[in-house]
Amino acid sequence: MVETREINALLHLIDDPDQEVFDSVCNRIISYGKPIIPNLEQLWEVTPDGLIQEKIELLIHRLHFRDLHENITTFAKADHLDLLEGSLLIARYHYPDMINTGIFQEIEKIKRNIWLELNSYLTALEQINIINRIIFNFYKFKGVEIAYQHPEEFLINKVLETKRGNPITLGILYQLLCGLLDIPVKAIQIPRQYLLAYFDNAYDYFSPRKANDHKILFYIDPMNGQVYAQQDVEKYFKKINVPPVPTYFKPMNHRRIFQFQLEEFAKCFNNSNDHYKNTELRQLAEVLRMP
Image 1 (cartoon, rainbow, N blue to C red):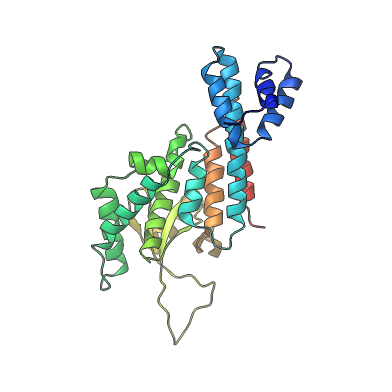
Image 2: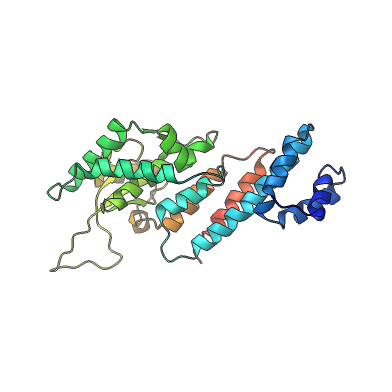
């Protein structure tokens, strides 16, 4: 806890009714960074006024957000963005004090249970059948449609805790597990869907493919593991009356996955009371935009 005469004076001014004074006080408090949070928490505990408590809560949130913005800015500068690290950073928007150890252990446990049933003689489809059996039958993960009234379904820590997630977070978890097991499953940018694809990573020495030539063996619905063939996806494009251009069938890089997740997460906060969260999440998505 930071103890200075100036901080004590600032804390006494939090309840000032003048908005200009309050804004000035907020900016000065935020300039102290996260070390001032215990002071604010102690003030919240001894403050009987609910409106003042809300102001303190907002200040604490702004301090956590500033720290998260800095962390994501640093993360975005890396050449390779780790799928789990990025997912945990996004979860910290709602759970800034989250401890990662249990999450790492749970993912490792799921990965190990899948790995124990895999072998080098399995076909691609047999590999996916094993993954589906472990995720959806053994661990009982349940996919639900995107519902913006349930923001927790956009956060990987809550998905692991509740075994319930939307296509984006379940898709990220599914892809993450496949990556840990060296199985070439990636998200693709199909319109109005978050779909995974199993890419053929075999190398043909007689007719080698170009670097941007991505051959898909089949598609996977992260909601339930259902597998789709190419003709199923072609029928979908006809149904929505959208031409299937090649970019839809290229793997999404992790930067774009996180950006998309944040943009969709932001849609959970469109009412007047928490619209500031919508703005903040879109700011984080912009940080991850390709330079």
